[in-house]
Structure formats: structure tokens, C-alpha cells
Length: 386
Ligand code: NAD
Ligand code: MG
Image (tube, rainbow, N blue to C red):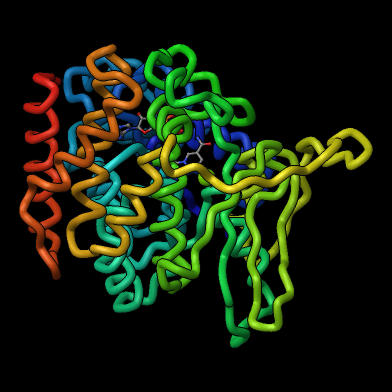
């Protein structure tokens, strides 16, 4: 029996690479459902190639175009947020790959957990926003959450065969992004075009900006806490500009295990689907004679204040990471429309953290309300409407 896969966000960077993995292993995997928010042409093309049972487009105005293009094919077509959140519950689905961006991933992920589907988690914002709730539900429903994020996949791979062995700390590597060597003065005037050029990874716009500001690494610290049951002080970040070591685990005897490879997201995507097995791949291999020096440095939280803000949110816990995530989503959207400066994004996030009411033990509805409130506050601060 082939594993039935649902890809949420199939038209994005992770989604399209996941489809390459599935195409390479069509003897093992079949696409059951594909979803996208806006890019209807690509969704149509993917649907024709992979012939899923169902496709969902978030933007309802694109429904008729999608429906018409797929008419005559045995593919069910849906539209809207409710359909996006419900499709994961379909009986035959084995694995749900969450590859959409932002807070929007929370509801479908929760639904998938309740429907006992295995989660291949790329949408880190889900764990940033509501890690505690998501973990509780995963435990209650006996659902596995497998990391797709390259750092967390590296940690996960280092932990294979280590059941019961104590982790001293996890060391997440960070490329440092395109502005790693910029002075504070230079950071004041960097543009979105510069920020969108990541040195090592080709990713969606939002995570590329998050990588440039190091909010992505802050989110990954929070993600690591929830995935691996760590205390905040057990998650460390080291800047490693070559992105060859994807992350490391230090055990209580002081031994450190690392996972290495060329930067290629298809490796962690494939591992999340095939775990505990490894499958063959045609991807590039690491050539040590060509990769030169591997270097390491401390992250600078003065220049990259978002990393400090994420750590602060992690320490405060409750709905604070949800507040930071929402403020950041709006700040990044504004930065991409030239409505706030690169450094201004941190000012906005910090103000929103101080303004939105703190909830120590949030429930699902509190996260939804917090997200909405934080977005409004952030928009008001920048006089920004979307
Ligand atoms: P992307 O922008 O390239 O693609 C996003 C996908 O999600 C698209 O298919 C889009 O249609 C869909 N989408 C966007 N907003 C949506 C919404 N509100 N509702 C439903 N669908 C929506 O993004 P990406 O780079 O593929 O990243 C996806 C997720 O994976 C993010 O959470 C990101 O942090 C995480 N991630 C990405 C990478 C990477 O290499 N790209 C690495 C690690 C983690
Ligand atoms: Mg990552």
C-alpha cells in the first residue's frame, strides 16, 4: 500500500520540493490532497501531474478557474479556509505535510492531529504559536510530529538510537543570513531586495526575511523546545555561515553528534516521510575536498534583536510567542511593501509584546484572539493596512 500524502501549501518552496521527492519515490507515496492559497495555475499543473483525490484553493475567487481547469478529471475541488482546515481529516490520508506559511497552519495541523494523521511539520509557526497545546493534543491522540525544518531534522537524526540518553543541549546552526557581517549603521538602510537574497537557501519570501532578521532562528529555538522537550537554556544557537552542519546534539557525557550535508531541503523532507527508513536519492552529495573551512561564531543579539525577542518570548511563555509571531508576520508583510525599515521590524515587535494582554495558560480560542489583537496593534503602529 502506498502512503497517502496531503501537502498543505503545495505551490511553495517546501511543497514543490516535496512533490519532487514523491515523484522520485512514486512506488511508495501517492498524493491524496494538494492545497494552495493563491497560485492557482501551479496548483492546476500539479493536480494534472499527480492526480490527487482532492485539491483546495484558499482564495475563493479562484475556485471557478480551478474547477473548470480540472473538470473531467476525477479530482474533487474545494475552496476557502474551512475546506483547507478540513481536508486533512479525509480517511485515507496517512501523512500531512504542513508546508503553508504562518499562523494559518495552526488549525489544519490541530485537525490533522485529532484525525490521528502523522504530521511532517514544516510550518514552524504552529509550534511557535501553540507548542504546548499542539504537544498535548499529539500526546492525547497518539500522533507523531516529524520535523522537516533542516535543523530539527538534523537533531532528530542525531537522536536516532539514543532513547533514554540525556541531552545536555541542542546546538542549532544558523547561516547568519545575508547581513551577517553588516554593521548596525548598514542595517539601517538595507532593502527588501538585499534581504530576499539568502546566501545558502532558496525559500519562500517570509522565511527568507525571517532568516535575514534571525527571527527564523529565534522561532527555531522555540520549535526545538517543543519538538524535543527541552528547557530554553538547553537550546543554543551558533552561526555557521556555510550551512553544512545542519545542527548538533551534545549528550551528558560531552559527546557531540552532528548531521551534515549540502543545503537541500529535499533531504529532510524525504526523511520525514520515510522515517525510520532511509531511501535512495539523486540529490547532490557533500564533497569534503570542495567545502573548504567550516567556521563558527556567536550570534550577535544586539544587531539581530529579533533573536533576543524570541528568547524573551520563550522565557515568558504563555501567549507571548503567539504575540511575537503575529507581530512578526505583519512586520514582514510591511517590510516587503517598503512600509517599515529592516530594524524598524524589531521595534514594532517589541511594542506589540508590551501592548497585547499576556495570558499565562492560553487555550485555543485565546491563541486566535491573541493573534488577531497582535496583528491589529502591529498594523496600527505602522499605519499599515492589508
Ligand atoms: P512559500 O511561501 O514558498 O509557500 C507557502 C505555501 O503555503 C504556498 O503553497 C501557499 O499557497 C501556501 N499558503 C500561504 N499562506 C497560506 C494561508 N494563509 N493559508 C493556506 N495556505 C497558505 O513558503 P515556504 O518557504 O515553502 O515555507 C513553508 C513553511 O515551511 C513555513 O512555515 C516555513 O517557515 C517552513 N520552512 C521552510 C523552509 C524552506 O526551505 N522553504 C525550510 C524550513 C521551514
Ligand atoms: Mg531551518
